[in-house]
Amino acid sequence: MQRRSIVKDLKQFELFTDLTDKKLKSLADLVYWRTYKKGQFLFLEGDSRERIYLMLDGFVKLERANQSGNLLYEDYIKRFSIFPYCGMFTDKSYNYTAIAMTDVDVYYIPTSIFEDMVKSNHKQLMYVVQELSSILKLNERRVQNITIPNAQDRVIQTLSYLMDDLGEEAGEEILISCPLTTIEISKISGTSRETVSGVLKQLKNDCIVTVLDKKITIHDPAYFEEISM
Image (tube, rainbow, N blue to C red; front, side, top):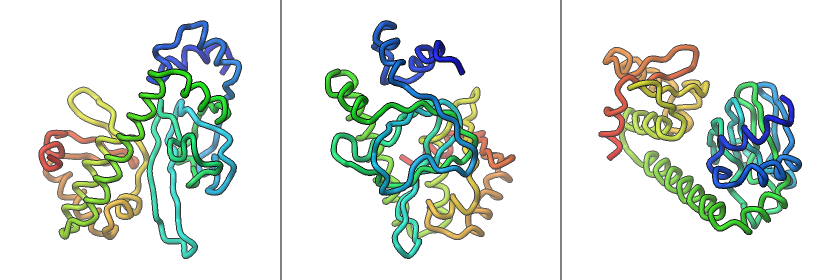
């Protein structure tokens, strides 16, 4: 990818939509392009928080585990997202590890430059605050989901969460193209792999979802919208 395409790419991110081409061209000189292969680490928990990433293509998983290896946090990043928001303006190191779930294209901006830019632009600062609020709401919803006694209901609520967080409209359907395994869905929902497989099988039989090559197509988004209200 040649640098002359950076301005066009930056316009795909809501954070930069109000910037003039002149400002975007100036910013382009501070932006770096990187690619990662599936399974590569973008950064590790505890690394110096030197870069803010802009996802161009692919999916990244953020995760944090305790010393015993038990998963404490897991989240997924899709294209045209900026990450990590956690620790913005405060932390000196990353709070979790970032792993490429697919081949990934990203831009990155030095953290100090990104944070200074946001601080000096009211609209950008408000956008960051709104994104942090949205992330907080999503994670509150996940915590509430774990407390649901019925395991099957937890899986359905998790699919609803994933639809809202990672889904992209495909006509009247919604496609979750992030390659999630039944094991990963079971971790998010706090259930077994067998429970996830059983719920997905029933949803397939009811023509609500289709799973092909680890991609989930939701044929009836209203089903999940109704149960999450």
